[in-house]
Figure 1 (cartoon, rainbow, N blue to C red):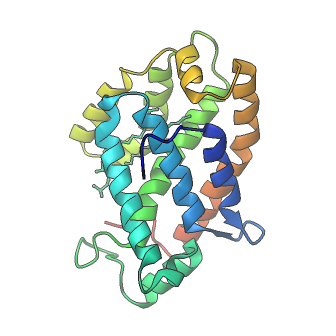
Figure 2 (spheres, helix red, strand yellow; figure 1 turned 180 degrees about the vertical axis):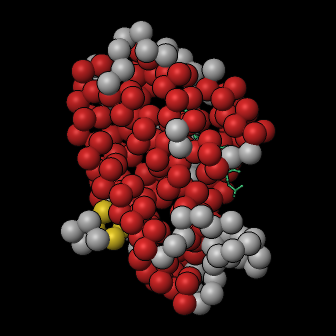
Length: 214
Ligand SMILES: CCCCCCCCCCCCC/C=C/[C@@H](O)[C@H](COP(=O)(O)O)NC(=O)CCCCCCCCCCCCCCC
């Protein structure tokens, strides 16, 4: 994944919109990962202070791509097929970190938890005002979601990184969508799709009791 490719938030939102298939009854892994690759490119454009986050995200994305291109690749085409295959093949550490610390189920759970942060952050961004501080919006969304799954040292490093975020108008410029009104219109359009992706994943993981993997 070359990080030099131009970021396009529109492409990211198209990926997350196109990943939900079969009448919202499954998610295509490849499109979901494409959305994350775009988000990581965006984050890289904000500065090296986020590189510890990018590194972790890229390593998770790359593991999923290895599964997708491997012998069992067809089982990793969608979230449903991945969950069913890994559970019936005992490829998931269900109660403690054991032989499968990087199962597809666990990696997607990590990204799903970040997706919740993204959903909360984008909603705050959508209802923000001109003098809203992006660092505050990020930190509030983080403490209401992902922070609950991170040890204190990661929480500290993450909140420190948020302090480096630019003002809202600069952030919108980096998003490169157009005027503030165009950004807000795009966020209004994107939010329902983001909710559908999050809700489907949450329901699938809840059904199989996978929401608290070690
Ligand atoms: C706009 C600023 C971007 C803020 C991103 C908020 C997410 C903060 C994530 C902090 C992760 C810290 C490093 C990873 C810690 C890992 O221990 C932890 C657990 O994994 P493990 O159990 O395998 O170790 N990993 C994770 O929780 C996954 C972290 C993945 C980070 C992905 C960040 C990409 C999000 C990009 C958002 C861009 C916003 C775009 C808005 C228009």
